[in-house]
Length: 219
Image 1 (cartoon, rainbow, N blue to C red):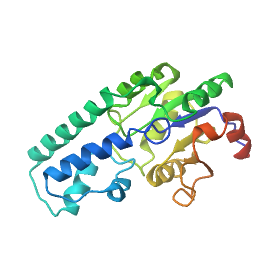
Image 2: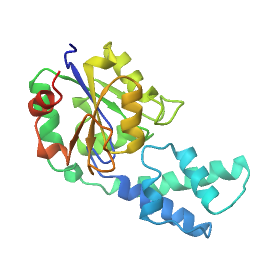
Image 3: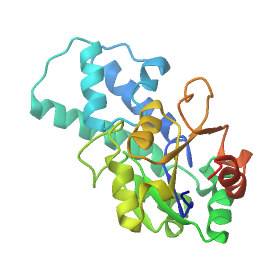
């Protein structure tokens, strides 16, 4: 029977909601390209890399552009996104997230981040919680997007732990699938119907405690 030794957290939708900033930036870009983009479309970009997100949007709009143009658009979108992030206050963390992290530390659990975001360090700095994470695996360190388990496997490797000893917290279908593929226990954060494949589903980190999560996973 495995022993839980670490928690690996996705960032957007679990610890902080910068998804709204991504949405605003992608929608702004889509409008510039004359492509319809709404919140339902945005759901399909959760946990997906910047490059793949742009490819999806271009596909929806039946647009074909050069690689150079794609690089320009990705850079523009990221600049807009960072403009929004720069205005983010330290208390922007989702309800109970900071307390949950501290409670996990108090239980001597090790903590890592596994996020597709290339701006994860900047965001953690803004929230003043970067020091809580022993390992930070973000979009700058990965080559494969979720549902590939790469980001979480790199996280467990950085902690020198087996995936079976780690619990992943994810708010996206792709992220939950990635965790399960990597042999991690998956805690879905959000809608129970959407995240039904997770081993445990919670509404948010503020609705439970690390001890309760461990007990409910029945290790």
